[in-house]
Length: 403
Image (tube, rainbow, N blue to C red; front, top):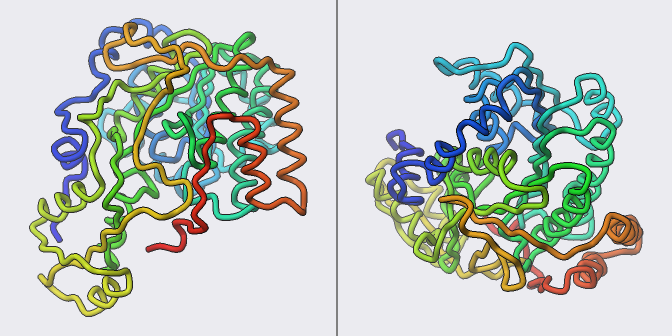
């Protein structure tokens, strides 16, 4: 297969935008972005992933003085460094440090004490996949990372307060049906409870096309290994490009008021089905496909396939836990502002829980999560008690049972 132009394919077949959705807002607020970023010290947590690294590339256009990047993915940090150092005319601050470490560790706290204070702290470290909620252990790890560590980080930042704190959220936090979305909605409540002492903002946004570990990114790996493609035929999603994902986070981390939740202005006409993307992906590469009746049939065809033989693809109806067939960025109970920016909307008001109440919720969750006798259902029950709009979809199946 010839090399596919992934950025070009995203523009022409997924987002259908010739330029970034956020170009106009970036231009309109260029002076404020420059004043807030230029010659400032920035800490990015989870900076080796698709969104975190795209955020870094966006902020580097405004020439910060110092950039510290933390991520558990040591290889990802290495690739980020190579990418930045290899790009022609790419600004990299004189003080540029990468640390492969857990942002909830004592080593991390010692590091930020030594390298801080920071003007901007942006946190992208999270469990982001619905796939990561198989049982009580995977669910406990998700809540620990998305909720407990988010609170611990804020407690640490109160010692040396940044001018801006940003923590990424997800559209799946709106009327959540999966534990990942529920954990992110609690995360929003946690960080916003600190917004009286820190300028805190977050963003819910769409799927990032071809992001690391995503279904579309998996296509590239499957093709390299001559393995079949498996894709839901009943799921539509909003998409942004990797570049746009960094830009919306940059805008959200600097603009707005404390407690604001940003989201992209995308409408029903922007929804794209995975089945449509899949068919166009192969068509662009001039590869015929053969639709299979099962995973087993697809694997049998793939192992015998050679040369220009049709590529096996299996389309299926979603039947795994926590799968939401549609997307939304806010609910009917949210107070939404659509006038402040060209491409961004803002959720201005959420449930008002003070920090003491939030801490009590976290304490109760920790008891359940750390109980050896807890199971996935008991954790879901606890989340449903705290989040009245959490309507968990449990089918007894998870994505790790599929290709």
